[in-house]
Image (cartoon, rainbow, N blue to C red):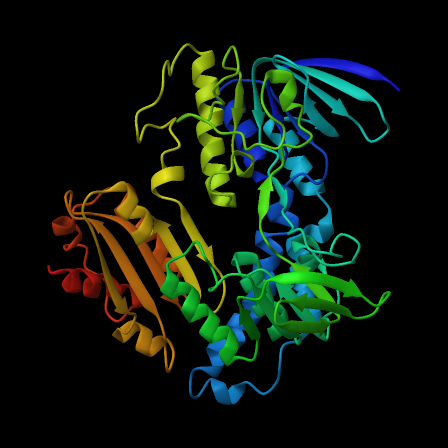
Amino acid sequence: MAETQQETDVVVIGGGSTGENVAARAVAGGLEAVVVEAELVGGECSYWACMPSKALLRPGNALAAARRLPGAAAAVTGSLDAAAVMERRTTFTSGWDDSSQVEWLESTGISLVRGHARLAGERTVAVTTADGGTVQIVARLAVVVANGSVPKEPPVDGLTDTRHWGSREATSAKAVPSRLVVVGGGVVGSELAQAWHRLGSQVTLLVAGDRLLATAEERAGELVADALRDEGIDVRLGARVERVERDGDGEVTVHTGDGSVTGDELLVATGRRPATDDLGLDTVGLTPGDPLRTDASGRVPGVDGGWLYAAGDVTGDAPLTHMGKYAARAVGDVVAARARGEAAGEPGRWDKHAVTALQDAVTQVVFTDPEVCAVGLTLAQAQERYANVTATDLDLAVAGSALHADGYTGWARMVVDTDRQVVVGVTFVGQDTAELLHSATVAVVGEVPLHRLWHAVPAYPTISEVWLRLLETYGL
């Protein structure tokens, strides 16, 4: 097969949203960039994760919201049109066609090479193309790894040999299974259990641990579990899966320590891990399979010459699309700045080229109903980091929420470093709380003193009134 060679300033491994942002910032800084992508340009979020999953969730959330309001509830006379929901979902993935994303790359001046990329020594990337050929690309300045993550499945007897859904199959499915068994109580498992239940599936959610959303504040997971059960989802905590079997192409049976459950489809949603197994890390002195840990500017320590960078899920830090894009902007900018002889040394904590938010101000929304949104540290995390911490908790019961829905149920927690009198973490749980999150993010990133935050007056009657109640409960 043919072998060709190229040279450019920056090679980006991975054409998802993180890789696109790295390349775009590098090009905006005056550099040449090549993106290497083995699948669809735009990546997991565009085709199999954030966008299609939220498109599946939104109609059910809207219908549930209408049913909570007398007057509006009377106008709701039917159920979701599952086919129409899935058709709309497909429009958000462009029918799993990346032509528009490729056009965007080209319009930005970024070159695309399709194929599987592996590091092949200093500043060198070897790409195996679909026809078996090889393209060797040498980076004059930097190689940035941004190829994301892959599913992590538990070592369950029979699982490997049993046809089942991962998140990709669950977000791209074209028919509603009568019975769906979901293994995993994290974000993906919780969201998709609710989405498919509202589309018509009888759903059983098996969670090995003692609560949903184990990385969130405990109360958040409890409220989501209560909501799922209230609408008919069978949520089983402490249900560790031991064995899986399928009757040919028929039903699948999942055995746990205290029984079994049978379904027509099985979704395994037990997390993801950095995609570094077949990346050629050994050619640069790193260990395949390990996350690519980075310094404050996104550079991978321990590689001679300082030419290797990483951003996004592949680092193991905050595997979220928006956090990957944030890191990507910093990496693309700092590579360009260093090429100009600027940005020497490590950036300061909140400098333009730093990725400080990955440790101090990670934002996340779980788009279940109720939503869970959080920024910064949980109470437990803050107690590990700071000497004196307090948490202010309250039910999200304000005039705005009462108007929003009858029987509105929500909860809020504000975590404060009392030595500095600044907010270091916030969690909101409730219907349509996601849009509250950025106000909390600004407070955390800006390290706004509480006495100053007191003067940020929330409009009445909105759900944002919770800020006033939190500060009052704190003692202001």
